[in-house]
Length: 400
Image (cartoon, rainbow, N blue to C red; front, side):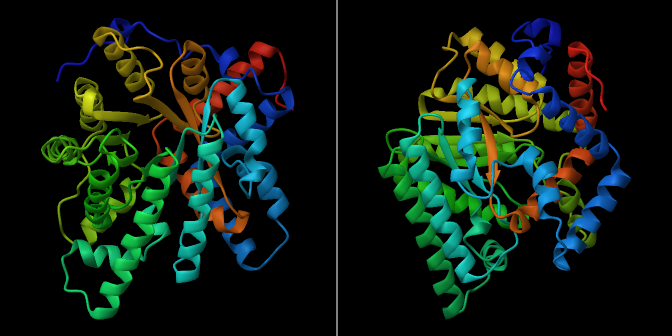
């Protein structure tokens, strides 16, 4: 697939850092600068995350330090009510909030039930708040990972496991039904390949039930996986055959190192594209496919890739779609790529930030993963660091 050059796209500029950082005070900008300067050094991130985990395990009094640094940068608060300021702040810039209860790694029935209730609360918040356009969750937040994996391997489940799996489906249906009846779009996030097949199957079941008139339930497609583009096309064909719409959230992916390591350890071919270029080509091909079939699809591009955002904009213009077509959204993570989010919003496109929240200790696995992903992602931390550095120079303020 031949892609247009950056010059050919000639669309929204993501270089306007004055727009990107307009809402940050000098003090906030300086703090962001130092955080990304540290995160730009992989050794510092590795040492920092090790000592953070150790300190929390030993119950050392470091929560205030975490709250005022990495938590403040990437999270909206510990509760939904704590996120109100962030929701308002983003809303004033024309940016939506996607509340993401980001507690990870807590696998007990009581934790699954608590997560279920939290997601219901985020759906309620979206139903009654104009600036909260979506709700989101991970299936592993309401289900044992081992059970999802066993189901994907098509193992025969014993009576207890089958009852547990039926309970997972019931929880999932509760969320999708609640979203449907409150007219709230609901993202099911992507996860590791060894449970993604189960997620895809259940997401399709929910879309067949709740997406008859429009996309309410969205599945997530990780385009760094070599089979994802075909999976998206197959999902569309299944939707057409059975008469329902497809909600598609497009991401590149967040588990690359884990996927490749497991593939090596278990001696099977990695599901990840061999090159970033192949991922980028599939991502933009997925955008193209969704826009061409928008009559029966809705799309959210969860991406920090400037080119892909520009590519989507150029295709929208060529097709003659409105900038604020409700079937097309862009989304980035809170605390990152503000140059994309704020400039898209100012230009009139539907734009949102993922806003994680949850108790600090419980959200630490997410924050540690975010720090490591930023460091591992080619140029990501460097880009954030340079953007803040350039804005400080533009304002004429020092880093001290």
